[in-house]
Length: 318
Length: 318
Image (cartoon, rainbow over all chains, first blue to last red; front, side):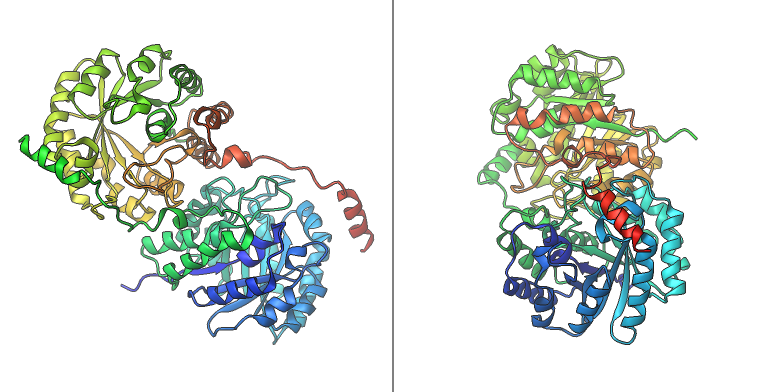
């Protein structure tokens, strides 16, 4: 039986780097993205077209997108929160504009400085502008809870997605657990029936590992038939509105889990781990990923030096 | 509907401390166990009756077990690998002797210095010795893979458990992922039908978070009807035969996940977090648990100082 294909998206260069205080040199970003391109990842979110004042870490968005090699079969996406960002991303020929707005009003105001109503209008305008030039993905932030408001009604999340899918023709939707509030029972509740509801739409889940449940949350997503997942190399990431929050789920840990479960990620895990090994040097500090430190599950250890003695002594006792 | 009850066992004082290079003072161990007793945990593994030379960190096993307060409703367990350990544990009136042997020959030789055949005989003798004095749990190490041999046939794990359940009358079995090799698909395969196979037996799963999949592995266990889980406060732990391997799944992270999913753990999570907060001081270094750092999922954050201005400006734009 052919294993089920699961698509892994890396967002480290955007969601990971945006919160770093140290600026990563453009050529280092380009080199990392070029290396990631060769691992078999389905999509790489390479930067964000936000205000350079708001996110100085990604002030080189144009240069990154124009200098990277574009490999066929890899989707090079850029985050876009507003019209100015969309114009910049289209100039650089991003394969995908990843539009972002929050399901909760407070987070949307904090993150985009617009009301949700304003974001809807602006993002709808961007959909029209991008037609024939670039694919559109809509990322719904705080879909599993808002760090300021708390619970976000599922009906509101779904209605927001419905509007973009049915009224604006958006073909790709990401539900984002922006600050790691989701739990597996909740993911199951939200995702059940989603594939049917948004038939033909590429649905992605975006989890953070804030409370250690990141990979656990992937499982009910898989069970609901969703097969695209965002993750961040090394587990880099965080959220400016939730201090203390750890990063995205880790790309190499996710890939390792999927492959060990028998799914096909299309990713060369060893090549991915080689990229992850560069991350601490790139950002100047350790990263939270597990497999990088422990090795893959199939790693074998030598027996202790006195093993043959131990065995002989035990067998002599019989 | 009454939420399903899930039983959380803490093994930090045994599986966690056994690998620490720094000796934790007996009175500090006793104080921590007494605090854990008041959190609502079902079981606490308080120490190990192994050779003080092999595991100096737990050389005070007798003193710990004799000095702790015993609260009704809490099971105070001690690990026991051989007859001498059993005699010591029975003298101290441990509620439960947690017998241990490995499913793989190499790991069993390394860990107990006996062949599996010898371990079976010794542990069966202990079962008879303990009758009427103490409950018996059998922990099967390397049930999900051996760090030296690799794959361990499921049939061997099940046959080993069968023999103890059916021939020796053991009423409690723990399947241990000793070095964090398990993945959720494998847990599902092994655990499916286990509750029926070992009818009436208290079945526990013991996971490590070595590759970040620890909490993910709990989910197929829950789905298979298993409702006892080992975990370690702060996520302390490791394995002497697998350097680099991170600790057990974290007790407070597990409890947080279970409660957020709607299960009833019977544990006061805030009291448990207060215990976890003492762990870095106890062992002299940071611990890997997530919820301790990020706060619970229901933690709320203040809006930024300029939020009202942002909102007024956005609304003025309409």
